[in-house]
Amino acid sequence: MLSELKELFIEVFQLVFGYFYHLDKRINIFYLLTSVLLTLFVFYKRKKSQPKPSKNFFQYLFKKENYWSKTAFVDYAFLFFNGFVKITIIASFSYWSRHFQFNITESLLENWGYKPTSLSIPTLSVLYTIALLLIGDFSYYILHWLYHKLPFLWAFHKVHHSSTALNPVTQYRIHPIELIINNLRFAIVITLLNGVFDFLSNGYFGPQTYLGVNVILITFNTLGANLRHSHVKLTYFNWLENWFISPYQHQIHHSSQKELYDKNLGSKLAIWDSLFGTLVKSKDVSKLEVGLGEKTPHYNNFLKNLINPFKALFNSKY
Image (cartoon, rainbow, N blue to C red; front, top):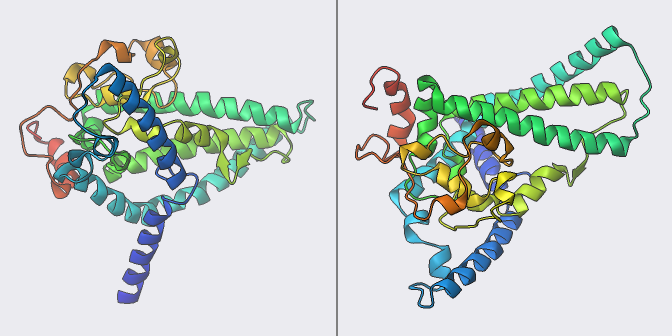
């Protein structure tokens, strides 16, 4: 028993520290470095508009409240705790995903038969990338909308919004129930897409990756995804924010103003927010405070964030 627990803890630590060197993880050191460069751009742009800034670049980059505060340590605790959830529960999703992908391909072959496609593998790769971006992002938007509209789901999603000072690890501040739901959504999307494209190519197609990572993810993470959860106000051109969610637009989503809770729900694309009336652009929000905007102590430590969502299902004060 003790040896099994020891192995589990070792696996969790390997998983968590692997986030810093695996290219498919947002806090990979490369993506963190590109975020630092973007922060440098924002800092000097800010410096020009404020001739007498009160902080130097490193003080601006590593604000104490964002990285060395009570709320930040709740983020770090969830990073490790959810490692256990991923190993003990979510790890099985990949097996079932492959199993159902095979069934989808076989079902399509039985119903439609093998029909040689005129589409080349490069063409299929482009279509797959576009489909993954559109379907993946739209399914994220719908689920995110439900998190904010259904009290049962908001009780758990509220944990992510309880952070009062954002940093890149805040993305891992997710209640285990939400983590499981999020991974189920992604597994369903990937399984369906892979099954359909496997059928279209008669088994010859494989999702195109660079070093094992989808090009969409690499691009998204390289262009400042870590700044979505930060104090760095990286905005896009006003017209571009109609199409893509900028880091500051996601920070607006974390605003303590309740009227902004259910705005900017998209992951990468802003088109769904624009289409359904939930888009708020950077120019419309000048000052920002993040968190739940509540003076209650219900979400000020790790255990409360873990337990109180269950209490919230029966008691509105949580």
